[in-house]
Every structure is written in structure tokens, then in C-alpha cells.
Image (cartoon, rainbow, N blue to C red; front, side, top):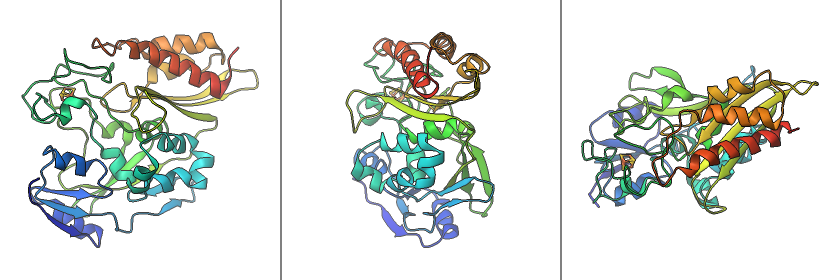
Length: 328
Ligand code: SF4
């Protein structure tokens, strides 16, 4: 391991100022960053520990918005009674992620910024455009069972590993960011992450030194919510495919409100406007769900080992919709 210096930040302005210099990084729970440092994939010269900043509160605002401080740990957010009651898919997604110990340590902001679990990214002997731009992508033509079926490029076919971000994307969450000038801006989570294109090493819209200070969840639309995760084992495993869905139906059984996002299928949480368009105003019935699943996967492309994910995503969507909206 390379040597680095460490400081514990006491306030947001000094933390942002410290990380705006060359080679510094924020650390909070460290549940992903420390692994990356041990492997020599992340090599910060200075770490600024932001875990004890006063950014742990979860606050419900008068308009019904929930303001989740970026240092609120995953287990606290998952167990918050307001989250469980009004944004249950966020709670379900968090509980589906990692392990109890990791959820007690991992922060909300860190969850959003975790790196892909592509094995070649972690193997420093393999070519990887995300880790080492220009070195190629070992997953293309290699073992790519967990990789992307939507939005991939010739440079990278990695997926984003967060469950929480998928549910938050379905619910139109925004991230709150602050820079060295103390300018605060909000970015929709659906715009925060990038597709790989030719620059897979640039994963989001964070500017140099910017810190995530909060996630803002707007009041949810009416309807039942569900986060369903399909994985190789029942716990401590990343999604092969996941679905976050919200559906509301009329007394006549027509779909009046719907949100759909997929996890495990792309470089970012994948909001499916195609599925939503195919569902809204239609009967809550399996035929409708199957048609929506076809639309959602219309542009999906397998990479060989992961071809099965296309049908798995269709089936997972249908099953999730049937659970939240019923099926005739
Ligand atoms: Fe690297 Fe992306 Fe290719 Fe994986 S899929 S080897 S992260 S470039």
C-alpha cells in the first residue's frame, strides 16, 4: 500500500477545501474505498474523513420532502419509520444490499459513489478502460456474466452496483452537492450518473472537490412500491437484475401511476421510460406487464455470458408488477 495522510474533517467548508487539492479524496465508511486502496486501484495522497460531519440527520420538510444527510448510514436509513412507511422501496433496496455489518458502516453518499464490481476492474493485471483509460476492456469477449445489457459501449460494459440508487432513481431523488465556494446545487439522480461512452472512468457529474451533502426524496406518488433483487445467493451479493416499481391503479383496475427502474443492467440505475409508457393507462394485467417488459428490453444487447439477463429482466419486471398491482 502506498503511504497517505489522513485528517478528520470538522466542518463541510474545510473538508471541501482539503479535497479540492490534488490527490485528496473523501472517506466515510470506507467499505469500498479501502478495498480499492489495498489493490492499488485508488491511490489518494490524502484522505479527508467526513464520517463525523453533522450530515447524519434525516429530516422531513413541510412539503413532505425527505432530506437524508449524506453521512446517514445505510442501516439507519433503511430502518427509519418515515422511509419504511412512505418510501418502502428505498428501505427494501438497502436491506437487500451488502451485509448487516457493512450497512452499519456504509454512508448514503458512499453508497451512491461505490464503484463497479466488474472483476477485471479489480484485477490490475487485466486491461480495463475504467481503471486505466486506453488499456482496453477485458470483459468484452471475456467472462461477462454480470455485465450490462443496456447503455454499454465498446469501451466498457460494467454495471453500477448500488441497490439504493435504483430505488431512489425510480422515485425522482436528487443529490445535493456543495463545492469549495460553498455553492450548493442539486442534480437529479437520473442525470447524476453517466453511461460509459468513451470515458468510462468518468462515472458521474461530480466536479473536482464537490461533496455530496444529502439525498432529497420528493413526496412519493400514490401507489404500492416494491424492490425485487435477483442474485446468485440470498445475501451479501450484488444484483444480476433488480427492479424498483411503483404502481397505482384505479377502481376499474387501470394503471394510473407508475415508476420503473432496473438495477444490474447498465452503467447507471436504469429508469425505464419505455416500460412506464407501456403501462400507464392500461389494465393491470399480465399481458400488459409482458408488453411493457418487451418495450423495456427492446434495445438490450447481451455480451455472451450475460445473454440470460435480458429474459431475466423481463420476468423480474412482470413478477414485480404482478406483486404490486395484481394480475388477471
Ligand atoms: Fe473495465 Fe468496464 Fe471493461 Fe470491466 S467492463 S473491464 S470496468 S472497462
